[in-house]
Image 1 (cartoon, rainbow, N blue to C red):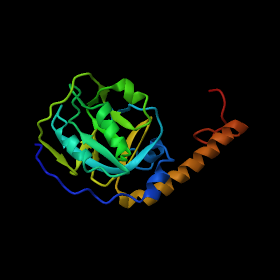
Image 2 (image 1 turned 90 degrees about the vertical axis):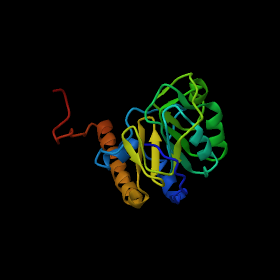
Image 3 (image 1 turned 90 degrees about the horizontal axis):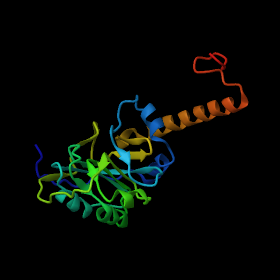
Length: 216
């Protein structure tokens, strides 16, 4: 049951750490989280590039965006607004105006477990926005809703203050406490994959199981 809690925003992640994750790929992050966490069913509604920031979480009833408007009054530069809209796609929760407000206030992006509208505009924008789908029908504005509580988006549980990263492959989130070690693991994987790609170009790649590559 959705209540009416309004909690203070969590401390933001180290900006240098966030910027470092902006240079990574969600696929590599997922690999180093045992391929378990990650939102399912969300897709990007923007030009592309990597989104990274600190989770400001919102939980609302299906098809209602009143509490999202409240959250926009709390957003800080670098926050990713994470909206648990119960996965409902019958009404859009945000559109061109709300994304413009978020962008102007320095938000790092929107992640909506629900629908958006004004998709044509959003898809031409560089401001990160993820959602399940687009629909022309607008939202209710009655509540209830909650801010800075644990939420679930596409099966991914996100806590206020988590680091959130999104790209063309999807969205992942993880606690700040594990972020430094995770970043190091991701960088090691990137180096390994770069070496594999180089060996492919050089014709020395031994295959996934250490066998000479070639026709099978």
